Length: 419
Ligand code: SF4
Image 1: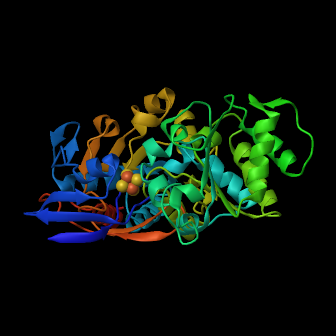
Image 2: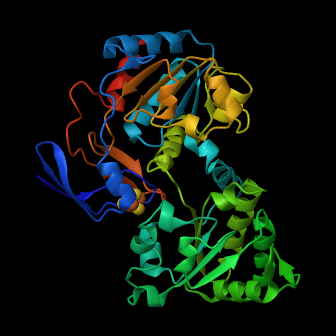
């Protein structure tokens, strides 16, 4: 059977032009993916049954144990949610409310500061369809899409022909601002090498330069002439777009850097049309924030322990709760915090009961009390995910999961039924 317009469930670009051929419940051919997408579609389950401390147990026993521990915890943490569909995320929020826990998604360790800045300053943005059709100046700041979002430049920004950019790459000017000459910088028209942790200073200098105010001779390692040239190009383009990554969000200054960048883009809209967008990593991290916000009013780090939703990044976010030893159990869905969290947070995770629901047997699964393998969302289960620009796209079920493996939705519904 052939499937067209399949959505790739790997990165926030959420390419929805993938062609897949399935034979005997196996993916036989894949077209249009990058190497990351291909690897995701060829993923296979390593573990086919729930495990308790390495020993096989039944799905009923594993669900009963998770429900029992979460119900009897004084403040459980429910973490992950960026690599599953929005129906599962909605159930996660419902479960967190029922057990009076804290629910957090991976934004709190990636673009959380960007979201905080968006909340305080507002953000001028667009869809990726608009950048494809209109953008003539593209700036990648603190990110390396050729490695992290390999088709972003060829589908939405720098290379393709658009409605008003018929010459494709020749109609667009591409700039990279980064601390090192990344692969993306090597294929762009201009590369500005910035000193580490001086993004705020460079953004401030650009804001001065576009208003024709004097700036120092050298800012963040970049000569005044280069800054003025870029400011001039920004003011005089027809449609400019800044895409920024963790190099901006997580360098010194954090949400202040992003806040300054959002205001730079607002300033530019006095002269031309300019937008800005964070490069979201996991394919549905944007969707996790959307669902949390519909349900609770807050995009991540939502604490139900007082019976109503409360949000205070730095206090109600996963790493802070673990480092301060303020939660007493943890359910991880579609994420691998042991691979990414600071050592002290992981050390505390080893002291409390941790449960994992994930298609892959991750490092976190390795320290878990109970691990339940689940169907791969976007391959063995359908649903909806949000692209980095906030456009919802449907994902197709292409093959059946191996016998006995349930979807995240089914597992969470059964846990909710027991708490
Ligand atoms: S760029 Fe991202 S969404 Fe597109 S095919 Fe590659 S991994 Fe999948």
